[in-house]
Image (cartoon, rainbow, N blue to C red):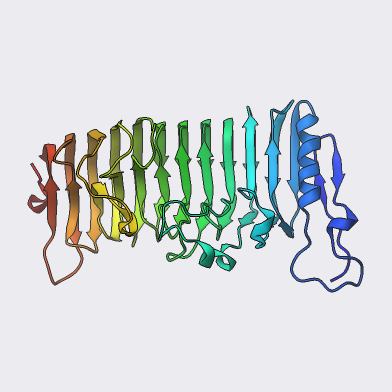
Length: 387
């Protein structure tokens, strides 16, 4: 491959990719050029500039190692992703994540480009199905302590672990984003968030090997609208209670979404052997269409993935004030509604309103399985009236 030079353009600064980041003229090279140094230098220059600073990733494929975009910055940062960034498959390069953005007060990432984690090359090294203390592979895009952010138009594919992780952040909007990984890829959550507030996910298409969206402890004020999920494990609250000192989750709205052939629909999950005392409350799920979804509506307070936790029945998670309204479509399992709550801490204030999901198979009938749940049901199929 011949020598290539790309520019990462800034509003007031041009940072040229250095020759020693690229294969030499006439040298044999495999794959696209490595541009880690150029991208990190472009960030440093942009972060030091005042006013609006724009970093442009031009069209083409650019292979990088870890990218650390740390603020605070003097101005507002815009990353225009016109080309594709590819994450190196050499795990020795990564101390933690692939693209980590920290401590910013204004961020925009937009464009029609792609973040390709190239995860298929390392998924075999994921041991999290076997043990709690597994080595976490690099997430693709991480926002830590970021306020006032917009991510729009871009695609994320085949991460090594999560596609996107939002932590300790506020006022973040994710819109018109496409997230794609095979249905059997391990721990490839689409968008995970924790200890964050005022998060909106709008008109986004997600297909993964894990949760399309997972809302972790300490999160409040989440709005999810116009999302299509599948394949994947559904749109989930949790898991909750795995670690000590987890905080409450509250005020989550999921509306006008479609789930297609996912292994769960809308789900709340907490560990039976929870290590934290916390409350999950004020959730509304409305106008949701299920297309051949397993477990379309599920509260699972005995969540125990891969059977590596202790089932002692001493739940410490309170789940209350949950509304499911106008949920329609088909279920690939007879259990269209599963409210599996704790006998020590029953779910309370559960509302089922106009639930009309029918089993698509022929070897059984549509049913609801409800344990230790208290609430009301109106306008539902008679088979799905728990109360």
